Length: 372
Image 1: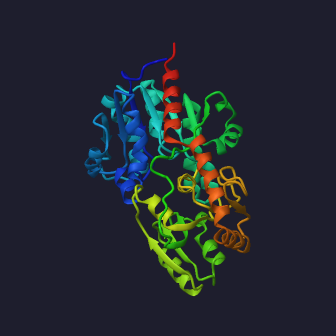
Image 2 (image 1 turned 60 degrees about the vertical axis):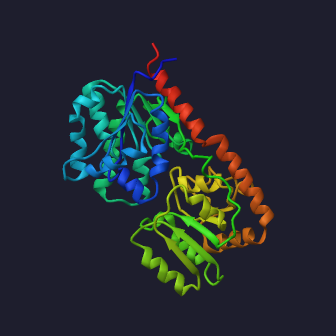
Image 3 (image 1 turned 30 degrees about the vertical axis):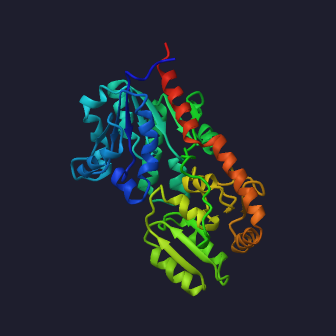
């Protein structure tokens, strides 16, 4: 099998994304962990970021052969993207171009055509479906349509979570032989069960600026129960959540930023995790909770029902307040059931989502791209 030590990999981040953004949301160590591992296999790993020159400060968290290429001009990301292939001196020396999400795939697609490099399109969700379900503006739907059609037509391999595999294959039949089911990875050594005093009844980690996350449904489900709820995340709806909790006699605590390393401690300080989201791609927050053996209440919706087996690794219901409430009370009242569900959830993550497994699978695919 081909050795990658003489190869260079280029990662193209998605719009509005960069190491500064990852750090702001406490995701930095999680997002760079795979690329620090890949740096052990490749000669050099380049990261094309949409962050400014301040990105370079994060080089201290990366392996010595991981190089950040920041956005050095102050223009909108949509205008900067087609300019990225002008980094000819760097891209010409790369062997594999990899995307981080569906947004941001036009630049590496152009680079592939110009420089004749291998293109791997990775995404944690189907962008066009995400735009449709979130009812994004027409221009956003058009962008995802174009980005998908261009990148998928010219890619050598396409990575998509197994939950979206059949949908994407049906949407783009020409991808059949290039499509690879590649789940998000979880650092199962970091995300472990912590036996700590219980400070919270419920924990939920999700941003506040997306209706799909259904914070409102959670607050409705626990109204009047007097439970203490911890929400971790940022977003424009924060004040609205605080007001709703006060009206519903819910003890609410919000923490905007928690580092990846601290998240297991917050799970360990909570009795159960409630994940009421209405749809997902391959949600890392849920996967991390499962890795920490949390008893989980969730909605049987796209991107969730395929991860949790009802009654075995969590409790699922339709996204109705009374049904979510019933499952919350059931888990809070039955600690033995919670331990059983959490143990099964951890086993599922170890078998399907561990960083070691994803790293090995990905590097094997890269090696096979160069087989003679």
